[in-house]
Amino acid sequence: MAIVTSTEMFKKAYDGGYAIGAFNVNNMEIIQGITEAAMEERAPLILQVSKGARSYAKHVYLMNLIKAAVEDAEQSAGFDLPICVHLDHGDSYELCKSCIDGGFTSVMIDKSGESFEENVRITKEVVDYAHAHGVVVEAELGTLAGVEDEVNVSAEDSSYTRPEDVQEFVERTGCDSLAIAIGTSHGAYKFTAAQCTRNEKGELVPPPLRFDILEEVSKRLPGFPIVLHGSSSVPQEFVKKINSFGGKMPDAVGIPESQLRDAAKMSVCKINIDSDLRLAMTASIREHFAEHPDHFDPRQYLKPARIAIKDMVKHKLVNVLGCNGKA
Ligand code: G3H
Ligand code: 13P
Ligand code: ZN
Image (cartoon, rainbow, N blue to C red; front, side, top):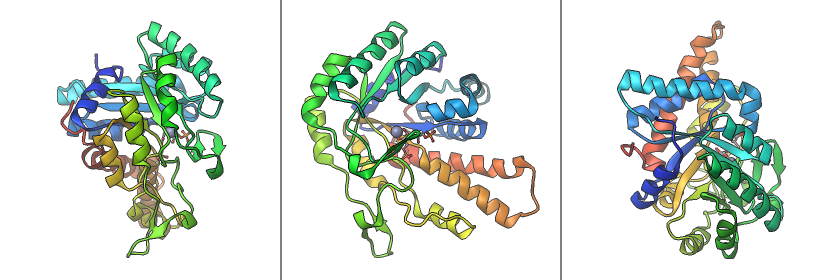
């Protein structure tokens, strides 16, 4: 019952001025940390699986771990936690089909790197198969800078979404949501130091998101759910913790949370956050080993890592997405 599509979630989010958090999952601790946070905050959730996650952990493990999380929510909290299971950055019809056949309720077909016509053609093929199986489809127009799955997209290739394209794209493909490029990008190094200014604390401040493009897209697609990828904020206290315990992440910088919160109040209904969870997990494990160099039982460091993920997700649900209490 609780594994659902994003249709109802997005409708309520659009009308309510908030967004649903889409968090990438790769293993049991990550799934547990995220779902425990959503349970405690009573938040609807999108758990997304990349091609890389699927080859790391296998589809069947991730699907069954997610089913276990739903069952656990029912049993331990008596709560029907709505979870949409989504393929992140599907790069082919075959991959999308395999995820649909394997029980996902949503897929992304990302042909944003192709020509407009090719993007329309393949997206439409995926939409036809998905809709025939009760599954929804996210597509993308415009190219984000940074790393998309295993494909390197250099900063020079970054191109904002052209608002004049969106209506035709949505009409011709029949997609259910659209990821757009307004200045976010993947990973922990979203901008070079040269692209940023520095605040009074000496921290890097990135150029602001292109809210003018988001507004123009929303005008052309009234009521239609918009998605933002690359929306980690790379909290500096986590970067500092990683660096102080032997890591090396100089100049890592993300998108200010206040800007994402503003986007969530507009037509943005889905915000993708992955790198911040990785930072939380890594910072916690580095800290653990710095304090307990004699430990070698994975439970000793994965337990605090799971709590760090849970705390990070709770923070996002309340302060960035505004979807707490909406499930
Ligand atoms: O956008 C990509 C996500 O952060 C997933 O990354 O390909 O390393 O699983 P991944
Ligand atoms: P971040 O790397 O900013 O967390 O973005 C994740 C993402 O967009 C997954 O598709
Ligand atoms: Zn992405």
